[in-house]
Figure (tube, rainbow, N blue to C red):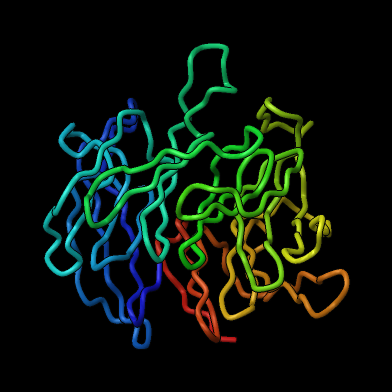
Length: 302
């Protein structure tokens, strides 16, 4: 995650390879975006899965070995000191992001046996950073779930199984486009919202097998009424998708690619760089690419 001139990178902790139990927390590293120099490394009390940098804090979710840290862990980005742990009455912590006014967290993928329609991932939670507390739980429209979150001003974008939506700070649905499958990752630009679509299927059966494999990106026009959806077929399943300064980037097994939105239909243009992205963080003029398989982060200038 890039904030101002700092790139924040999480490093995994230590787990029991047999049971998956968390044995030691991970850490977060601050890197100078211009020079690539490591500024500092902060130890965490959890093995981090995701985090957000906002409101002069780091907001971390992950696997814990100490129940005191079961929730969203708020950390001082200068010292690494735990400032607060924000808990909710129900399980949450699948995804996290920041808007201009709040921290939003996705519900956990747990539900009563045989009732996947009541899964926690059908909800998002709003945290008030001034109160260090969950102040609202919002059910997503038409049973969709959380797979990715992104902030845009004070509003929240959510993509997941069965659709993509934009939610106001008060929890009102501002935009919703349903689809039959998984919106694995999303990126909003001024004209459209882009969704990577690796799995198809009918609600509410989430299937990730050969029969339900999809190899597409959806471009959904934000201004058309009803929204106009353009399907872009790919040679392989897409990975993560992100955008900055009007440029859309995509990862996956095919490597790093840019999407040219000046053509109709849009064209996916592979960069040809020997990179297999795990996560992509765009900035004006380029993109940072993390590769878990090689334990490295690469800065790509375009």
